[in-house]
Image 1 (cartoon, rainbow, N blue to C red):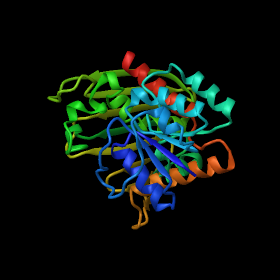
Image 2 (image 1 turned 60 degrees about the vertical axis):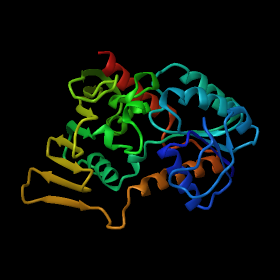
Image 3 (image 1 turned 180 degrees about the horizontal axis):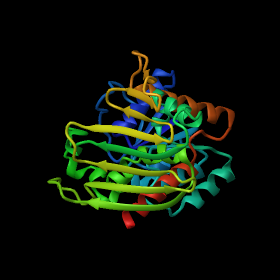
Image 4 (image 1 turned 120 degrees about the vertical axis):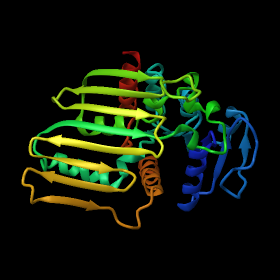
Length: 318
């Protein structure tokens, strides 16, 4: 297989490293300037024009450029016959989603979106516990994810990154949408969304600095999701409350605990010591490649990804 990587920032380089680790080295790059890779001591063909890159007939394209460019880049790649791996969020808008779906259907190609947190062993265990009734009927979810934006990529000015710029589709509601995706994946259709944006930090950005999102699901579950660019040290934790207990997950310590009304029954799930964060990226990549080779639907669909965008936009608009 030949792979085209569109946009070669930190996530683009991660995908290149992971493709190489899986034995795929027929890789070409589309970017706006020809420069050395930051973390990979190897050269690949670089194209400054997308049409020229697509003329090399890649089998799949990784869409890793700024969020606001995702859909137009994806549509052009799909029109050229590429399968698509699109980094999250899939877009900063709901426009053109039907056009992209139509192009993929017409050309019999698949698309997958990079919500790699679905592969975290603790998340998979949470899903197993909730689906299996370990805490009874689920009542509510509360999640917090906060990281200090200037620390994300210390080698660049955070004020000029896509995450900090509204016109590029930045802001925590979209950029930190993993927690939205997981809530929708676990609890289904959304009935109501309310958001409260906060601009009260010292960050020099034109997006929201923080946002609190309240979601009412059609099955009665409610969720309170807090996302921010402010916290240092970072914090990322989730609590799910049920009629017969609760689940607590701390991402940074990989600690997952199940509490039940029987206080003598506290169950801790311990992640294998060999687990590395990059394992999730490898797993999603394997699934994507298998979907392409077998021409079967991806496990993280465009429909799923646009649902997260819809919730984020509704929260911002409210």
